[in-house]
Length: 228
Image (tube, rainbow, N blue to C red; front, side, top):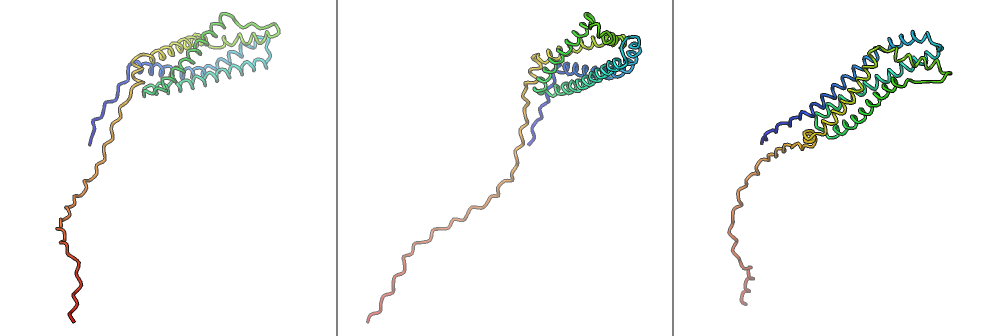
């Protein structure tokens, strides 16, 4: 016995748009990882060339270079991991799983906070540069050269990505709260009933023949004794 197959439910536009935004952010995070590692060597060379004119010792210069490289590698690793997480969430949203939507909200909250903090740090560095004591003059000179060692477009790129990251997370979180998204994640998919098993019909046996009841016979009596 066959049953008509029900058509799969269509994904609402808000879910498709949220998934697309997450995928774009994932691609942007991967691109940032590649660019970050690509400019690292040029940045270190520019920093060493500028640090020769300061009062810092070679050990101090090497220490700042190590810090610069570790910071760049750590940033690249975090960006690559975030790209994988965003891509996984985007694919999970398309399946309509409620747990994925909750996880997306959590990630959006963390990402929004991180983006705001990045913008605040960039603005704070420009508005109030780090000031150290007179005995740490060499360290202050080296730290002031780090931002100049990067390409001129590096700081605006980081600021733009931070703002775009915050806006992207805000847009995704908002889209997932719309009624169309609630209906998509709260739907109950009907399951097709299983076909009943067909059993062969039981064989028909002929009715037992009816026999008439046997006549009642009295018990045999003892033979009479012969006369004497």
